[in-house]
Length: 546
Ligand code: C2E
Ligand code: CA
Ligand code: CA
Image (tube, rainbow, N blue to C red; front, side, top):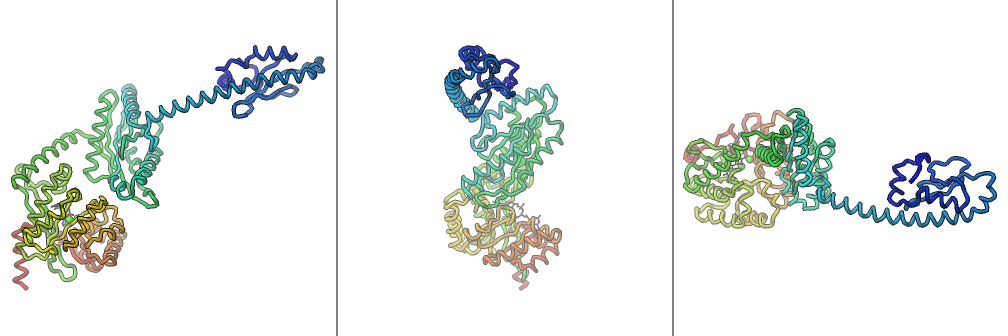
């Protein structure tokens, strides 16, 4: 409705007045006629010697002016008619403003609710990131676009390592806080064309078009991993959280969205298996290794049923000061009929995934108790997986075994990991309490590799710590790690716990540990794991020598 000559930015006036079609030049002309003025028009910038009245918007901001040119000869007449003009204009303005305000309110309310529901349909309400719907849309678009562009699309699956533990120990509020901070940090590392989504729980996914090389994707993943370098502050506590990433990288037009996602997930799974806090690219071998694991699971089940191929080795543990053998750790072995020795880390992982660990773990406990009852070993240590503690009857089953093999409870030690403590459930606490009060010694294995919150040690009253071999291996190589080892030993002393160092491979490490006051030592330097009969022989050799 406005002429281009009035200096107003057209867009703004069109928006304000366009839909109403009220205050147009025709209306103004009528007002001008009645008021007896010439050239009544809307202006935005004021020129001198122009008579004017302001026009307000619904927020009482001046959006423009009604201006007219007072003609000198008619000046007196104009002055006389001024009240009429003012009245006419005022009425016009009131009507106009009321209508405008109403329109804008209803319009913006509508717009707000429409954009809110659109936003919610496409975004995760907790973090404000894209949700799965939006993610798939962006991924499909990227794959279609890259088909033309000939660069690659990266799909990254990301999830937090041990998020469940954070949630369980610090509560859901902290879990939510963590999600939001993770979303914020990750978003900061990404360019605008990338879409980061939260697909649920602690599962994030990224679609990144325009990747020029594998190195480019490497660089992006590095920066995502680095976003976790600084600890998170959750409910006032500093918590270290890391993430694992799986990457699928492909040119557009080759694979569909769901295959890209599947590959990224498989790569993520592999990154988790090979130690977390890392990223891995999909490769076809991963499809095979998934199949392999399923096969391995079936074979392990078979081996357990038939009691074939599974046996225990025993690694002696020595007193650091006096040098004598104080006990031994039972380590399970699997001699596969065609594959040979399967590494325990691998098949125990498979057993944990499939639930076979309950059966396998009980079998190990039984074998170890039976063996210990027969030989003159002060005590036997058995590893117990966190998964086994999900069985509420575990403590009773262990106490039953002690009864059946007439093994005194003080001759059994259970090596648990922080994963057990982090389950933070009352039933775990009850199980540990029951075992301890029966006289079974609870050892915290791999100490220093998990969250190692000293408060757990107090709550759960652990009897003994086992310093992880990664720390022991750095003695003599890294002074900072050495002082951590010293602190661990001092701490366990002040909490009245015994302390073992595992993985002692060199004289220098042994000497340092002895000097630091470590109680027990275990490692290849002192003895490799050996089979039952050999350990029994070693024990009787010691006795006859004494
Ligand atoms: P772990 O509990 O930390 O067991 C100690 C591992 O360190 C054993 O490996 C042992 O052979 C190895 N080791 C001992 N001394 C040295 C040394 O001086 N240097 C080095 N580099 N390594 C040394 P292994 O037998 O391969 O067991 C690996 C892991 O598998 C164990 O780690 C434990 O977490 C798990 N595992 C073994 N047996 C069982 C079992 O019966 N039940 C459960 N739940 N886990 C088991
Ligand atoms: Ca162990
Ligand atoms: Ca260990």
